[in-house]
Amino acid sequence: MELQQLIGPTDSVILLSLQEPYFNKILSGEKHYEYRKRFKKHSTKALIYISKTQKQVVGMIQFGQPVIDRVDEIAAIAERDQPGHYDAIKSYLGEAKQGYAIPVEAVYLFELVTLAELKRQDPSFSVPQSYRGIQPSDPIWELVRHLEVKQRVISDDC
Image (cartoon, rainbow, N blue to C red; front, side, top):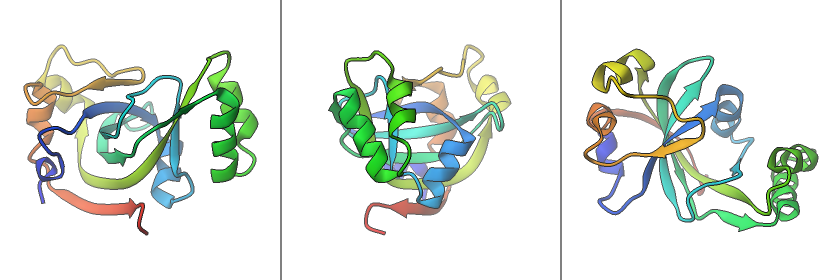
């Protein structure tokens, strides 16, 4: 199945930078939420760019409706999901008035797309610090839309 078959015409698609250890915890099923200071207010499909260690797009995460709440409530979700993470998430969110706990519904892996390939497709490409929207007219979408999905790793019904 091609990646574009997983994305409907009204789906929100972003390119999300993620550090490899956090992505690996999502893949292993240990981590069920991504935590952010800012994010979309609706379900989103995110192409995952692993920063620093890999410098490539490795797959897509289908995120559900984010929980947007006070920092202590988001930290409590983190504690329920991964005991011992309350303080780390509270510290990460810092002085923010609210945070986002974004549930992972599914992860799809596909052929890797390197930073060099991304820059070849779009010379003005720069890796987002957090995330950036992807539109059908975006050169990056043209590069990834026909990639063959190799594996659905996890889903909310596992």
